[in-house]
Length: 411
Image 1 (cartoon, helix red, strand yellow):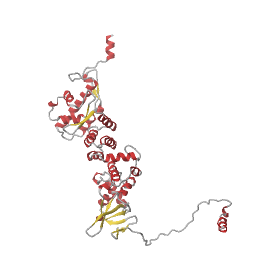
Image 2 (cartoon, one colour):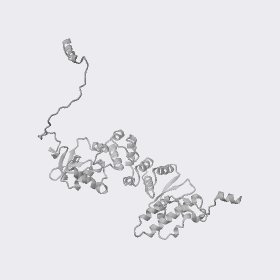
Image 3 (cartoon, helix red, strand yellow):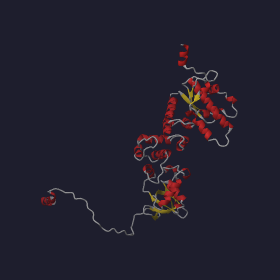
Image 4 (cartoon, helix red, strand yellow):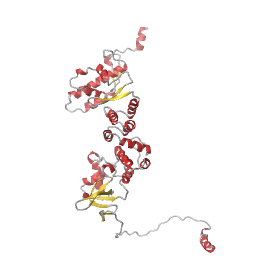
């Protein structure tokens, strides 16, 4: 035994004086590229190869592929007609020829009449649509070795690439719901695959996954408003947190945030706070407009009795009361008093909705629409004057007196 040990240790004597690292060197050598048959382990479906080998996937006829169900697609709402960059995408795919990434597929569980299996595409639907637009006869696919489609969906949340379209935030919400409710992934597992939210710059976290899930459970009307960018992700996040289980109130809050000049996120949070403290309520008029009615203030700008003291609605020609009130919610004006009533002014910044209305007019405009818009402006001006204390009981501008000037004259 000792002789064997001595023999092993003796081999290390060459290092007794130390070890010197040699600088890496290279030598010239020919490199010959050849083509040789190569055996690979190919996946089989019903005992047959997926298709023709494509180097990084398999070629299959276009008739053998279709999109997977929306529940398992990250970009479940993608449609070429709504993508302003679709033509550029088609051009990019055409330029790549056959070198576009293989589309991940799984067997769809059904065959064509001739017995050929159909494969479901679980990612990159926009590339699939581009290939259809180019009238490609075959599509390159990669058969996935996974336990279930949720593994592909989870991976799609993190992958980026030149041909990848960023999913809408609602598509991410719906994907997170699918991953948690159906495939039983934890918030931690999903957070590890998320990218930073571009709107609120929140890094991936379990709390972010929580918000994605509760927004994903909002009423379809509210989710559609987020998808169409009528309200922001931040609006939806606070609405879901406060009224995620109250469909009626969540829809009303979303409509309130989106109508007219739109409410900021901070304004929506204040409305939610007042609603929770029962200091206000949300009312809906006959035209579907939503208004916050303050219950803690002396002046209720949208209540019936207040509006009637501002303008005789019965005297309008064609506009409806609800029309005027809906448009009124868009205006937030400031009156700048002058020494004489005729010299009083209105701050221009509050008249932007009127400028938008006039710029969108075509050759003709409905009298009811024009009257409703102008009535709303006048009511907003008068309300601003009342709040500033420069409107008399008769409803006219009062003459403003310079207090300093009056003191000097009396002395």
